[in-house]
Length: 102
Image (cartoon, rainbow, N blue to C red; front, top):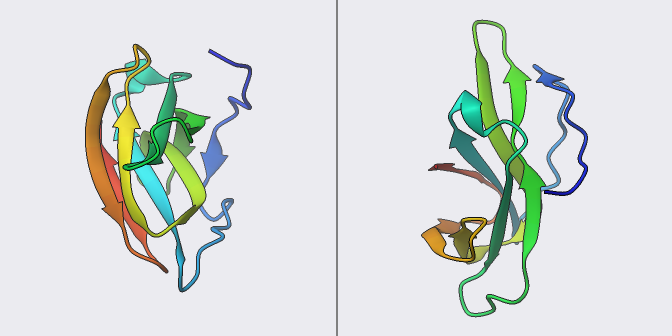
């Protein structure tokens, strides 16, 4: 695991950089995954990975734990476990936020 900002974010504190050809990926996890790095890569380029760490996100009525990765070009991505084995895949649509459950 790398050192990442582990401070929780609050409602309205994240600005997404998405557009016609770019998207965001929100990966929901359980609280016990706080700090876990989750990697994603384009389906056809597994060596081209980007990652983010799970953080708590405080909303008005609850706290969720998730990874938010953006901007990503629209397309299909592999979601990787830390052991290098694929967890699953997800397709992102430009201009949107796609949710994935870990």
